[in-house]
Length: 393
Image 1: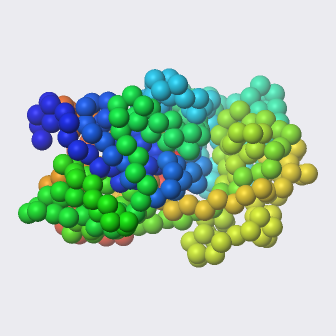
Image 2 (image 1 turned 90 degrees about the horizontal axis):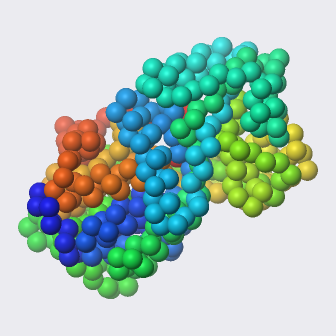
């Protein structure tokens, strides 16, 4: 697989059409592979479309993982420019803590200090300056908040537009195909998969199968007799009705996170909603927990009292057991290549380049820390769950 022309006319079947699938699919097709992407519904319809989509490297140790995330922000901008998309908004993020919660304030200070030590630009602002110069429609209580942190290399993107845009560009420019269906079997000969079987009976011949199925990646792996060390983490997000308020940044405030969501709407995230999602109970827009989250959002955006929740989005993210991406060929199935990570929105653009580089015989060193084989000795419990400061991507 180290040949520089390995991808030329190779039949690659990419399972899944979210952000972490369509960006690599685009780059692989660009490199000469015959790419077929399989998706149940439409690009971005699964976990990608139900993501807070905070593109960041804010709280992502170790440093190599942080660096991977930060580089991907620039790669996202380049990808959007290349295919003519307008989904990337690298406007930065604002973070503050209530000084009366000493542990939370100290944790935030530690995260920001680490970013500075790692060469990131982080500005310390007073609440008054942040409201006057950055977010005039937000309220930051000067009596409770001493410092507002502005992280410059961060932002948000429209994940469905990104998935659709890259998939469309791959089809129009490089003859990639999108096939709608469910993968129900992977036929093998020896230790390699040769056919992807869909639920309607169609067979897709494959030289390489890229397992980028997000929360379904574990099931796809088992179809080939492989195993991935994954957990599934559900979450809920609120989308408001059109609001008479404009946010310019992603906001991480005490008890609630917010960002713009297009069409004058805001997206609201709150930990109590994710806890409810873990119980498997769907929430209506008038559920008490949704109303509580909206009340919390109104403490940050005073223009929201007359604005109600318009929708509640449910999503499930794949969470590798050590919290870091799983990227590379399976240790037992020769041509099954996994690309699975909880931070799929952030990492999609960088992993697209690195995976393509590896599969064309180039440098694979940046991916060595993320190989599936690191779990070979047995996976324990999840040892690195990202904190609330930088997990919602």
